[in-house]
Structure formats: structure tokens, C-alpha cells
Image (cartoon, rainbow, N blue to C red; front, side):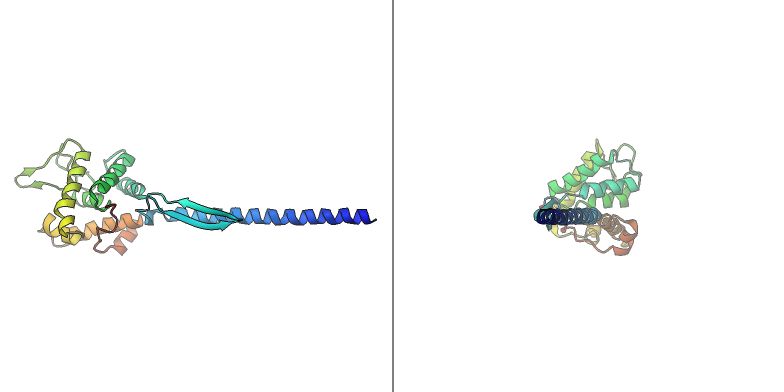
Length: 220
């Protein structure tokens, strides 16, 4: 009789610990799944998180860290795709724009924002010029390039050297030199496109635009 009772006790104890283990494992899985869903919403608000690390704390005795992902290329690619830019493949040009911005140390959003303002993201340019930024286009002639990449590289370098580095580090300040005849609409539009990339939303771009600090998201 004692043996039977002990066996029954041990069986109940085993089921008890098994239930605790199952509950803990299920809770941990649900927690991790929820956190992944939350993180999936964040990337477009983390445009420069190229090497950051996000800690999820300790789950069931295991420390969990997720390496941050640079979302800037996805942001630019989404922007080019949304407006059906001829800069295709989008992934290639998004990467080139971000890499070139890092190369010269300027905000990665500035180039696509100016391209949107000047040429509707390269849809309206002088034929054969590959000049999407209105750069070097005036009554004396048009500055032409052999490729979109060459145009983007040259404009990025010039914007850094002849604008950002001398303190023209917002669209409104850049406008005074880049297009001095503007009544303010040029900077307002550029700021809207910059804000749109910031929030990955056209509606929020309009609602949240301000004179962007172009030193905020730079790698140098």
C-alpha cells in the first residue's frame, strides 16, 4: 500500500514539473514572438542603426540580444519604388545612394529628396544627361554625366564640400545657394521628402516636416 502511494505521489510530482516546464517554454516562446513583432515595426525609425545591439533581456535564464540592422537602404528603395523612379534596380541604387552618402559624410536622405524635387526622381531630366538633381543646369548649358551613379557621386561630393561643410546644413540654408530664386517652396518640398523617408509614410512626411538637420544621420 505504501509502495502504491509513493508511486502515485512520484507520478503526480512528475506531471507537476512537466506542466511547469511546458508553461515556461510556452511563455518564453510567446514573449520572443511578441518582441520580434514589435521590432519588425521599428526599422524605418532606425535609419542609422548599422551596428547597434538591442537587448531583449533574459528569458528562461537565456540572455537574448539582437544585432541592429541598417534599414537605410530599405528606406531609400521603398521611396524609389513608391514613386516608380526609373532608377532601377531599386536595391542597387538605394545601396549606391547610401554608400555614397557615407563615403562623403552627408545625410543619406538628402540626395533622393533633392532628386524628387528637381526631377521627380529622375523622370524629368535633359535627355542623355543622367542629371537628376538639377545640378549644373542653367542658361549656359547642362552638366551631363555618363551614368546615374556618376551624377549621384558628383552631386553628393559637391553638396558636402560646398554646402554642408560651410554651414549650409539644412534644406532652407542650402536653398539660399542651390536655388536662390526660390520663394521657399524648394526647401519645403525637400523637407517633406526627407520627413517621408524618416517615417516611411507620405502622410507623416507632410504632417511632420520641419527644416531637417542634415548632420543628424551621418557616418562621419
